[in-house]
Amino acid sequence: MIREAILTTLNADNSVHIAPMGVREIDNQILIAPFKPSTTLDNIKCNGQAVVNLTDDVRIFAGCLTGHYDWPTVPASVITGQRLENTLSHLELEVRKFDDDKHRPKFFCEIRHQKIHRPFMGFNRAQAAVLELAILVSRLPMLPQEKIDTEIKYLEIALEKTAGKDEIEAWGWLMDRISEYRLQQAASENMV
Image 1: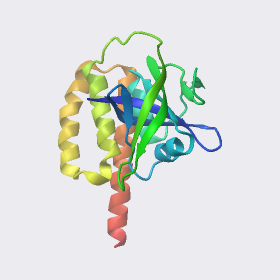
Image 2: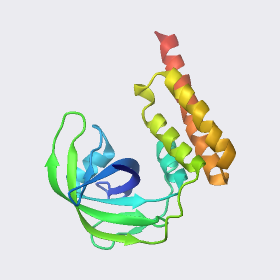
Image 3: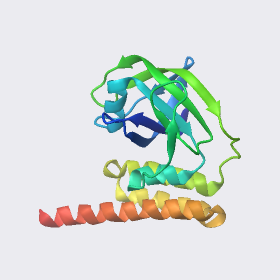
């Protein structure tokens, strides 16, 4: 099973890199498999540590894909790193095994520390729709425009029925990103 999470890693200058990523638990270890190239991949290779942040604030997922990175962090408890300040829970990880791959290397990580900060009250349908749209946005170059449009129409039903202000804000960021991407694609096609 893949859990959608926010990974925090440290850049070479000790600033915090925040990125959405699906992680898996396998044999009491957390598997992180970032695509090449990525800052998350470089950071974990460099320092061998990461924090998995489990949150119900879908704005963070949307924000990471649309340039909204100002999410407060605090120091991790056991590893050298930072976690999201307002996360529901977090896992502090240390790499135990690395399997390289030309597309998607795998880090098998030991959980060094975990803590629940507040209870998870469940996702409403709009939050799930924003997560799905965020995944589509992360794959814009890989998916046909028709598939994206079909998915958006379906996801909009949940948004219209159950969204609060945070979900509407996150949805807007993602839709703006799709529009920007399509404008860039059209401009590059017109140049050819």
